[in-house]
Image (cartoon, rainbow, N blue to C red):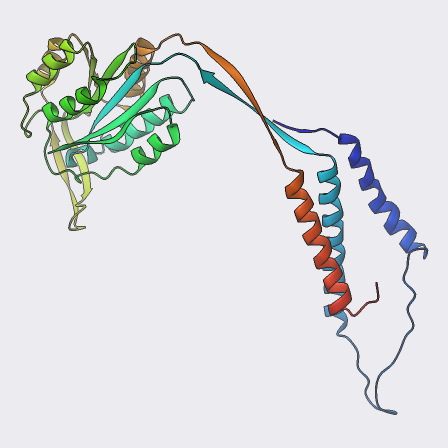
Length: 333
């Protein structure tokens, strides 16, 4: 929120119309002595009228802008900002996101599955909270993209830069879950959870999903599995990140919901199915509410003053106006 600590300074702007009125009345009009330079009965030098008028108008605009900026600086604009400073630890939530090529299927309310997931995560996590969120990509391999952090900008920058297929063609659920468990195991957070968003079943990797689910239960880490996409035929457009080749085809979509539900139950977790953007949003919202923690915090007030900026701008505008009148129009100031 912006405020002016010396708002009465804006009354000085009334000097602008007063000045132009007095100048029009001839009080502040500069003394001018016409001097013609030229040969006897020959042509004499004369500024192009349209050029002189344009430069004079520009100089006047710069002068008014400069004076206005200096008055604004004198009014001392200040932006007040409030932020929450948490004094207790929130939940740690790791999103394990399937980035196999099948996530390019366009059956989520007209969006690709990966785009629908990114959009919903953006919506739910955009508010600054006390929870730490992280991201793991999972395809043929699994890799940590963002460890649990409260830095939302970092998280969203990495989330938006996901490229399908960069970790291969496959779905290594066991590897993805184990990678998340290893990063949450040493966390001091009172609540730790994994949100797996996938459209497939285990067909790659070196760790069996059952093993990962049992490990999550042993480590007291809550597991949410979200099956995303519809069954049947769906348009798929995919760009190979290595060759740049574009693939476009009809994709026969299916995943074993029973198997995913079994994995969630084995970890004492929960399984959801989402076949459109709305159901996915409702699912992740339910997860957020389940993992929410009441935290203690205090409000930190910060003020940022902008008078140096307006002082600099005003000075630059006035110097430009003086330059145009003195050195371009050759006026004596």
